[in-house]
Length: 162
Picture 1 (cartoon, rainbow, N blue to C red):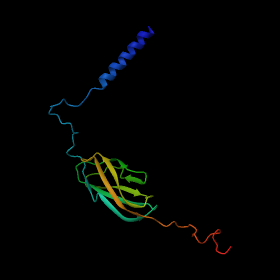
Picture 2 (picture 1 turned 90 degrees about the vertical axis):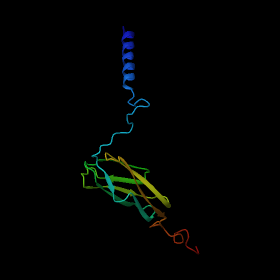
Picture 3 (picture 1 turned 135 degrees about the vertical axis):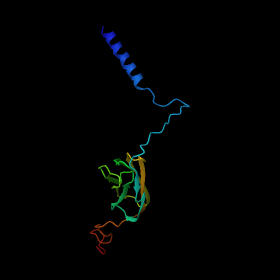
Picture 4 (picture 1 turned 120 degrees about the horizontal axis):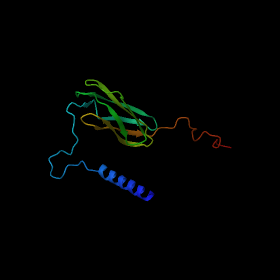
């Protein structure tokens, strides 16, 4: 009896899994669209800028920029996430829905550890007509002098004449 019960349960599990994996892709040659349907009234980003140049910045000193946008659509925009490309960037954004005609912001804070030119991107994810937008920031990191270190010729081991 146990063997029959296990076999029945396994059969039901397999049948359920096979029905759950049905494809929603239209058949080849079908006139159905495969792209997601876009809400014509959805919110729309109008960015004040999509690329910001920090110019020359000091190594190890965080810099911050606020990317501002206006919702020019007919419905609110909800920013769900901002994806960064490295651990050297921290992001924040307007968490409340941004109503039509209102402004919102995405903030990127960058702390460079490596000297030289850089270009970084963050991706804003939302329910707007364009649900994924890349914003860029760039600049050049200049090696900074380490404040507070002991000058090479002025320490207890290098006091000329001892």
